[in-house]
Length: 596
Image (cartoon, rainbow, N blue to C red; front, side, top):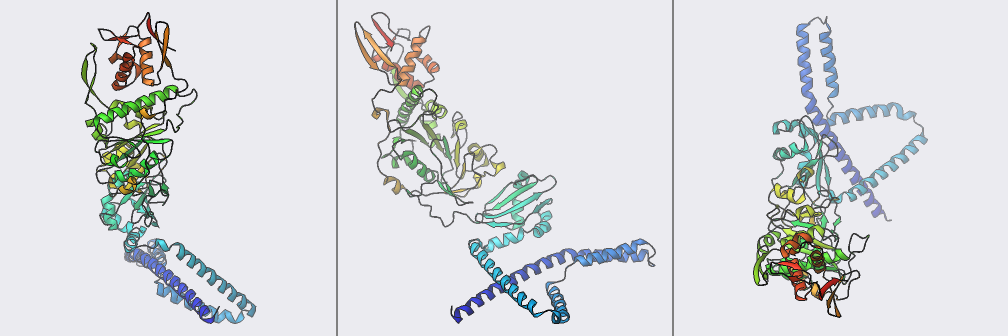
């Protein structure tokens, strides 16, 4: 190492030591100034008390005057000297001690003392450099410095009463990658909920800007709350564009971790218009449509988002298409449940019968448009009649029973209110909720639970767009910055064959009942691979007295559409007959049908 490098290194160490010393001097001077400002009025009070005691007892006969004198001395001792005076006294004391005792110290002690001082200075310099390198990304901004200063216990105590926050005391604030975190002690009748209601007073005390996200939630122990000021995000600087290598939902803004949502969950995605609901769902739709054992079905009456995925998903964009695809899904679900092996509670997805994710985009539109669709069917007298059909009962059935058959329902809506945007039969079945910004706390409670606000799930305070809360029973109420998946990226994805029962394999499933149609001596076998047909036929066989078509809905648990299709299939091939009064029976005698 050259002399120039050595000299430069020494100068760097000296500069670091000087900065450290100046910083410590400034902090100690501020501390002493704060204590002097707090305790000097007490000295004045003690002096006034001594003056009154001297007036009462001029001779000093009683203990009143002596107590006042002792109190004045004790109060004066508690007032620290200014930093310059303290440093002067310290230097004078060290100089006197050195003048008296240094000549008596042996030379060997001086050598080892010099070695110890050099080692201590080197260790201190290394520690400071390491700390500065580690904390380089956490240097406070001007706004954060002002907030940290006002969150100091002394400042909070002095201004809490005039802001209506008497009985609250701040702890030591901490700057993190997600912003400023500070514990607040609550005395008297204060609770985290009451402090949350007084957020405007807290914001005024801190002088925080109106748009600064602020979160107040219960602390780690009783009598404490936790105040979070979202001045920064752990996701800042991350590339949030979606790629096949970055397939997560987004990045946790507090921890910086990748947040993923596994398949196999009943999911609710809600957010007001413009919050980024469609963009947030695209990475999830890709996962649901990728792989040989996954299939995607999208119900989209707005015909916007579904059109992007029609090259790799089954898309229903009209009320009649919605009802047809729901009937197919319900039939598939019932058939899978029927043939599910004994001892197993969940279907195992295969390439022939994959996991099906059913996505309802804008559920409120489906609830209003796909509920009274005219369909022609055969009446009790054999004539064609028009009936009103709805897709909602089938979707509710899928929500209740679909998980065992690996048919999962994802419900998306801009109106997260029960019976307006979310059916009351579907809402209780939701296992995972993704909530982007909503308009009111009531909507946030519908999506995230009634205890949402009390536990910090404040979706009505989220920024727009692209920030969400994910509640799955495991995560904390930390916002997630969702990944951005462009429309052009979706369109460029590889094609996949959309799922449909008409394109499903025709191989007979093990354990599926087979219908045998007997006419004379020549039996003709017709395999009934449709679970709905088998359930309807069994209900008609066991019914006593004979039943009508409308009664089969309650007996089998199927939707009206599924029952109507099954009855039409059985009457067409002659397995059952319809009497003049509308009752359904199985022919007896020469023409009979039995389940083999």
